[in-house]
Length: 196
Image (cartoon, rainbow, N blue to C red; front, top):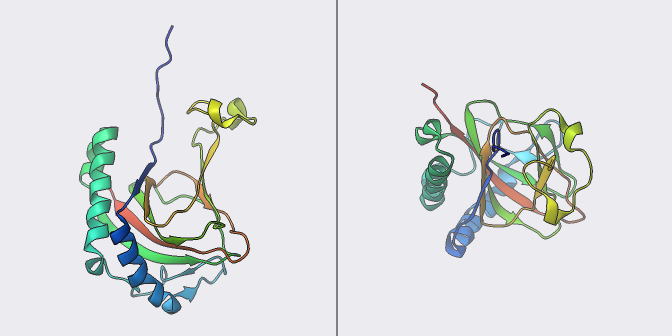
């Protein structure tokens, strides 16, 4: 007998150097006042604006790290589509303690990248949901030391300054509210995958 691993989802995490993390924080934080509140009040962002508070040419070291992550992701998952991917959209979001983002995904032809510019200890987590629809099969509480890709219906990742998070665009996720006085500032970057 054997079990064949199929339909697994890879989420990449990577911590940039302290120098890059500090440089990005020093560049972004003074400009957060230029962000507008989202119409639904969920988060402050420049997503809907014609211009961004940060341009990619101002952060070449971070862009380089993101492409290194993309290459590693491609090599590890053996996905030739990812090899041809490039950054097409990006924006900044500033979550205050009351802000959250309901469950959603980013579409079928994209990798999504989150980079945390700054995150306090009490910032809300990002939760990823298992894409397998028969969650009742895996339903129930599982001790952390017994969790695996077969019995886990969701995964929480705690924000941390200087961390790059890369995941497939179709993967459902949500961002929870932080507790009192929490801080979570992020770049959100789409890497578009051109499928031929």
